[in-house]
Image 1 (cartoon, one colour):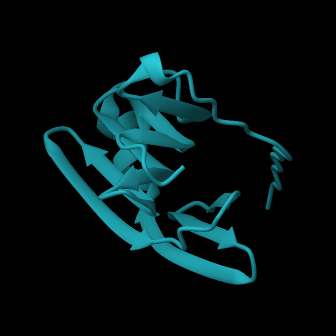
Image 2 (cartoon, helix red, strand yellow):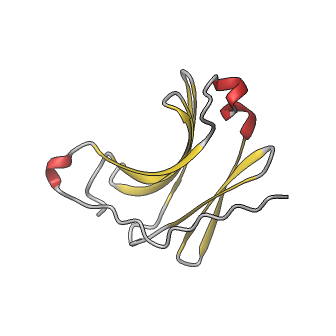
Image 3 (cartoon, rainbow, N blue to C red):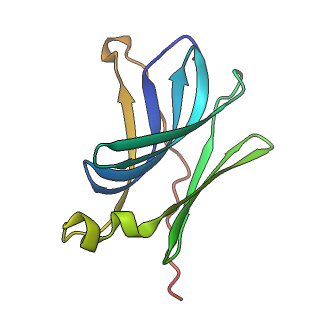
Length: 130
């Protein structure tokens, strides 16, 4: 609900704890916001879009190709393009990590005593080799 703050839920394109791209819904200033975050070491950049207060679900989409990850969201009839970020900054050559990039869902609540829940549904993962 809109009265809660410091609650985030979304999807991450994760290389390491200091190198990841995230697309998530966050309660900020008492209202839901869509956030695209890029963290590359100490550099953290966020782009935000305020969502309607009455939302009860948001569809998050990350599409990747050899050069970029593209971030999208759908909220009712509204489709939001959150832009693209380059894949090379999450590569094993840059990060030094042998595992490669992982996709994951996450939820964070700075006040877990409230006992609120985030529900993920309709999860789809598609890999198309070109």
